[in-house]
Each structure stands twice: as C-alpha cells, then as structure tokens.
Length: 284
Image (cartoon, rainbow, N blue to C red; front, top):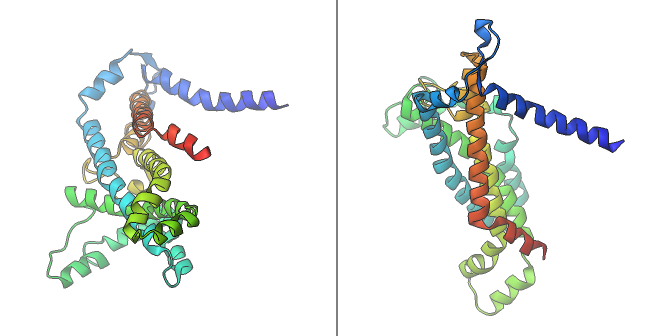
C-alpha cells in the first residue's frame, strides 16, 4: 500500500523538475503558438546578456545582505530583552502579529502607509521637516521600502525561534554562573549564545532561502517597479514565464539558475557553519 503512494509522491515531485530541465534547453513561447524547439544552451547564454536578470540578482543580494542581518540582530535582541518583563505574554503575542498577517493584507496595508499624498509615513516625515518620499515610485526608495517590509514581517519569526531556544537553556547552569559572580552580559555571551548558536544558523539558512524566493509582497506592492528596481529573481521568472513574456523556455532556464543559487548557498553555509556537527552535538 505504501510503495505506490511513495512512487506517486516521487513522481509528482520529480516531474516538474524534469520538465523544467527539459524546457530550459528549448525555446517555447506560449504567445507564438509554435511547438518547443531545441536550442541547447542558448537560454543560458541569453542570461549573460540580460541586464534585467543582473539587476534582479543585485536586488536579491541587497535583500539578503541588509534585511537578513538586521532581522537576526533585532530578533535576538528582542528575545533576550523580553524575558521577565511585565506583561511578557502580551508583548510576545503583539510581536508575532506581523508574521501572522497574510502577505496580501500586509501588501495593501503597506501601500497605504507608503502613499505619497496621504500615507502616515510621509506625514510623520513632514512633522520632522523632511520632504515626502515616493516610496514605491523612486528607484532607491522602493528598494528600501521593501527591505523595511521584510524586516517588519519576518523579524518576529527570528524572535520566536530564539525566544523558544532561550527557554531551554539550563537554569541551574545560569544560576551557578551567577553565584560565581558572572554578570548578565557574561551569562549571555558564554552560556546562552552558545546554546542558541545551532538555532541561529538554522534561522539564517531558512530566512536566506525565503528571501531568495521572495515574491508575494513584491507582487502586492511594487510589482517589480519602478522599472526593474525591485525585481527579485523569483519575481523576474514570473514576469518572463507567466505575466508578460510567456517565454516558458527562458523562464525555465532562469528557474534552473535560482535553484542552483539556493542549493549552492545552502550547502556552503552548512559546511562553513558546521551545522550538521552542531546538531549532532545537540542530540548528544
């Protein structure tokens, strides 16, 4: 009974990948009503000349290079600061709200917040004597705006994981260190952070993969604009293959590139951070 189900699941998982691999070596535009034609590596050669694809990689790198460290620091800081404060449960619930809001709702809300004429963000800036900003219409501001949204929405995830990890730090170890004269910072640095290290690395990889697949919030706010300013690679694939281009062959080649980038980065991080070894130590 189980073997057919396993075969079905493997087939359902493998077929899209094999089809994508097949189409990446073909030119197939749904708008031209012609059958797929084998072109070898032409789609991959086209990538090297595609300036929009390069801009997508740059923006994806910016998102990972700025949003990810900020989310880690904020999430860790909130997890450390929230313990033992008055109303801890209430604060904890409030902090998790952004993560629970659907991307569609969050996108609409942030479009209103960023509104040039009537948005609260520009209103607040005007109170400090600053000029209004076209958050979703200016090249640089749109990128900054999306990075802010990502930090707002996913810092709670980092906080939640690390806060849960802090609950598992042995209290007797902390109390022994405190009796021996260790201060709050020493306890955090030499006891709590080493315990959190495996979780921090796992969060780092999970969020990195999420950022590389960023799509929904871009769709709801900037739709990749202005121009190609806020195209993450995943959204550019959507535009090429579905929204504007209908170029399934080139879209498949771009998807292969994204898959290769995610696989390479994940494996490099696992090897550099020795996550497998850390998890084995945790189990021991």
